[in-house]
Length: 218
Image (cartoon, rainbow, N blue to C red; front, side, top):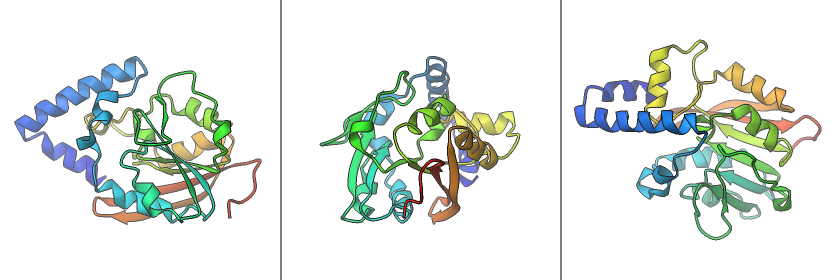
């Protein structure tokens, strides 16, 4: 919510407005062709250091000894906060260093990642940029037994203005809490944790989903 308010205030700043309009056009174009903004995310200046706070919150929900597949690894911040017994596997649009799984979550078909033997997949600030989230959830349900998600939730029946506000930061969908949980349930998961973590940018929604056919993570 706070992020969207700041986005709307930026409209009063002409240089920022021009940049936002370019990003809006890019977002619409990429959404149309089901592609991710590789040029944007290859630029390390786009990787906000404040997202480290979110990574630290997410890490608190991952048990020791887990094999962690981190989609949208970025600065690999999550790796620093995990228990030393965890195995960290970064995945992103571009290489983020040794061991990176390079893939575009908006392209189909998605690859088979069974060989990674991941215990949990992390989507921290990633699903907002995915055009076809239902098919992604269906795919990931065949890859890992659990997903840890941080997602900026939309209000139910989000209006056109707020959807536009999400689009100017590159987001291509707008799920409410109930819609997101229902989407994962339809993909074969159940929600085990539904909470918030506090960051300098405001509350960060955190949801842990487990494949229904699997037992507890702990």
